[in-house]
Image (cartoon, rainbow, N blue to C red):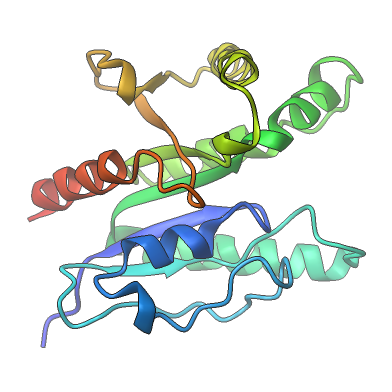
Length: 211
């Protein structure tokens, strides 16, 4: 039996990857995954699927923002992820890069204001996945946690900062015409299921392209 095409879900610890996985399942009640309990605890990389689904989901281990992580463990998780993508990148028809809106300002401030030498993790991750030509959707999660004014301000900061790193990220809900190198972005809330339809629609579009 031919293996189903794979959807990649990747991001820092505790950004809502497992919650999003649950929402994408054909029967969420039968999904046994645990969400939000122990950031960074998911180390096994295995497909998640149900018989009626047209694709399988790979929810990669979370990294960064763990409570009291050892440097060795952080590096171990990053190495796992890098090796997995290098080996399996051709299996992915699409990838979701999940970002917590509450952490965007802090991450960018460290780079632009405190002059930290590391590239913001989100941009580093997106650039890494782009090298393997995996089509991506940026999912800005937890937008229910901020006001509309703050949401627009933070996402504008994210988009403008991304442009400085050569990333053309556009909001798909604004109906912007997509260009060849554009990376779409959806504002999302796993808790409130905001824009879940748009997320599923985008995944379906790329799944059809794969087939």
